[in-house]
Length: 336
Image (tube, rainbow, N blue to C red; front, side, top):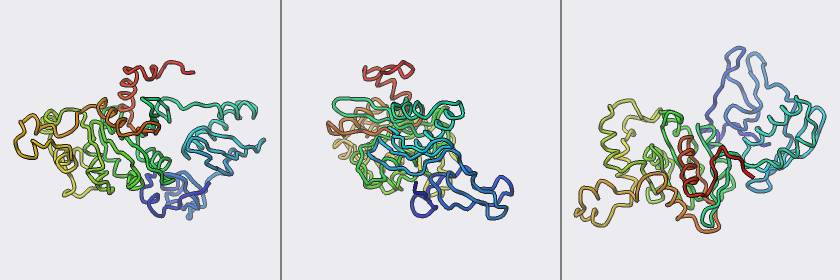
């Protein structure tokens, strides 16, 4: 496994949960960092270091996007396991499963069989077939998770069709300033199509603009009609609420200001100044997640894959829409 040492783009956007030695408080030094605070660390002050693991991955090779070949060492076994999931984070998940299974006394063969026959769970790499396209659902709820999803999708330099859904409901967390800790720059120039949706679609569009995405690259679908959104924003107090963490005051923009700068979907009549007030208030190609999904699917050619990266309530809403269309069962129902 090749680590990250904090240099370059990956290091710039490391959302580290713990930097300090739990014994003396000094900053750890890393000889290898795989993501966030996960890696090989040592405290230069008191000498505390990463414990030697009893279950570890000696080598990781990627066969295909959905196929990782991992050489695993345990106290009793050395062997290769194929993980039918993308992403380095799923190597960690597999190692955790192996460690638990061995602690319970389960033999090696059932462990290998269980991992290699695993199917993606609800929203965690789940596949849905729609009109000749494949939808891949990749839940992302925090900066570390989204950074790893982006690394999984774009580290090979392959252009992807993307739909991002950013919500700020209670289950997501009201503060979405964490998107400024995400390495969206990694995806710049690699989106074959890009749709942005959710209750905080404008905030995400602004973040993507700072990451180098041109406004015309984005199809922005608000969660509500723009007039209703303007009334909602107008009813909220101005000030610190909703500002991006660490962003200078002159860079803070309300969603309606972002809309004016990022939307290129204004009707010809509106450009000529002859549009009705209703037309001027809705310069976007519809609203709501169902519309966003439809637009993103339309922009994805038949035979290709649309990658959807939602926050938690966005995933629930998306699943309800797929269930309504008869494309997938309820997520709590058993699958073949």
